Length: 117
Length: 120
Image 1 (cartoon, each protein chain N blue to C red):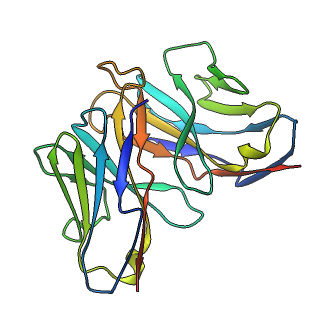
Image 2 (image 1 turned 180 degrees about the vertical axis):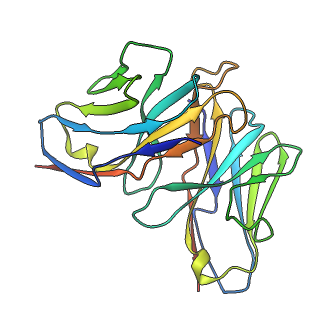
Image 3 (image 1 turned 60 degrees about the vertical axis):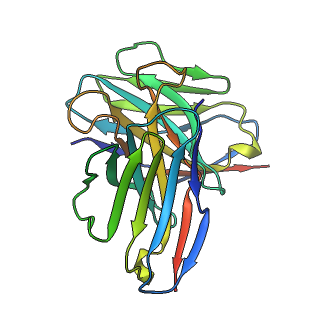
């Protein structure tokens, strides 16, 4: 079974500054995806960024980037130039892509990010 | 990206009644859908995997007779909470795996907007 650990229950950052959210995971799978999802007060889950495990290059999406350390099983999210709209819960998630239980998401407990004006 | 809808978005019911929640994939076919439960300020917990044309697979600790799942078509899965009690009050979310680019493979999950269930 997979586990995902987010060790920072809450974080805050000043507007326009940079913040990094941590995530570690444990798995014996070789084929998987890692995701960061954002859940604003509306509670709609929004994909922030995706990383394929076989890719060594870290994924980036505009102000969002990840530091994927496969050997260390670490998958941190960096948010640059933080904006007020980034205030939300952020969930790290793991998805295996083969075998029993494929495509199920395993979530971390989440990090509540507050962007301060 | 693909779109998943849920209905209703909010439902209030009396204790002992049953409530049905629908999850639809609007522009793609989903042979598999997932149902999650989320309590306030907590993470999403997988309840069950819904498979089109076959029985759902429930996670350990989830009562299959209480949470009935039917996946009768490639675009619709339903979750029925039977004999609901106040402790069943929660936020229920469905998701469907698909390709972000509309291809054959799976590289993402698409989430419905969720259903808030309040049992009085």
